[in-house]
Length: 544
Image (tube, rainbow, N blue to C red):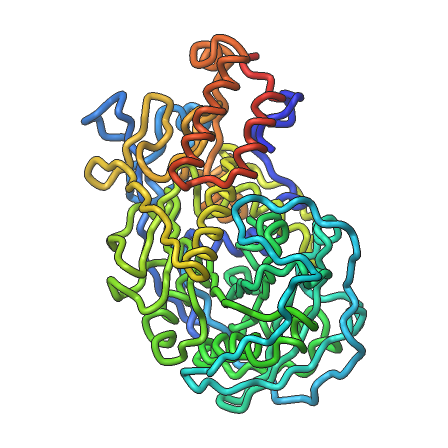
């Protein structure tokens, strides 16, 4: 985490080795910066919608223009650490045509299984029933949109030449989770793609809710961004998490990773992506025991997408969900807003400083949070990409400013848990405050931190400035220009600044505790995350 007993462990870094920023991370941020949308022929179009910051300490004073973006540049604190590059909006990446159909790969049952114990669940989730009281009766689901039910084939855990799936697998043993991979085939349209299921080994720990993430493919591969950010939340609450290879570019990349394991994959192109995603959701309802095992009745399915896949999910809400009627709730993270002011199912929109306030207001079925301190990409997501099988080191990436270390995932945990409760129990999340703005600029306080938005302890009792601009240490470093783009910045306060804010360590702990308690009371923080933040504050060397 950002604070610990060792000062070195919480200080941000201005360079990132590839064990921190893998190839997918470079490509993902690269597309995000240029706002590029690839069609199936490889042409591109896009726009840039950078959001700027201005300090309340110098209200009315315009920041120097950023020559690379045409937008205003960084705050004075950021300029002191080095020039930064204003990010553009993330673009959607469409896939390419798949290869001719090949026979399905048959194998034994998946076996990436752990029997390790599960830590105590956080208070945020709906408690699973004890095993002796659990009702294993399958939930009757009528498939109101008459979406076709695909054929499922399990993929052996040790199948193919790589003998492992293309997926993140860190942390599951600690929580007693296992991973199962399936290929699924439909005829309308004709396709074969894959889904990855993560579930508790003990059915009694299942919450009844399945989160289904549309893989982000901006880097040319499948990447479950929300799993990377919040995997501890999903597992401690007993949720099932499924990743779906909805788009051709990700599905085809699986064949490049392991041509034997994924020989049967045949994606017809991204005009079929929404149907593929719908049919994956249908299979979770109609073939539950095949996908999840016995005594795992599904009470609700919730769709997720971030950035590029969030944009795809926005289109799904606009054009597909009303007819398909597959998902019970949807989270669009950093990927736009629905065209309807009142969607037909609960939709939770989450934006960061990089995207700004947006234009939609809350309604009966729409809630939007903009999270202060959060950026489109950050160090946590970049680092966790190293868990993908293709991660390898190619050298250091020098950023002008350290990547953002703001723990945005804790606000996301609460948003995910609210969506779970909203769908299951009708408990609507609290409204989020908008960012304060001055013209097109986000207003900041004298420390350079944004004002307004959903506020959590690291913003209310900060030890650093969290900005959204970043760029390369050298303007000639094209790779760093791409990799640092939407990663945000962390600029630590000096020893004197910390002492001015927090005269004693006890004062710092008290202010963090008060901020954490306030975030819990407002519905922006889970109690579990509150307790972790307070422990970190107690251990932190603040003031120095």
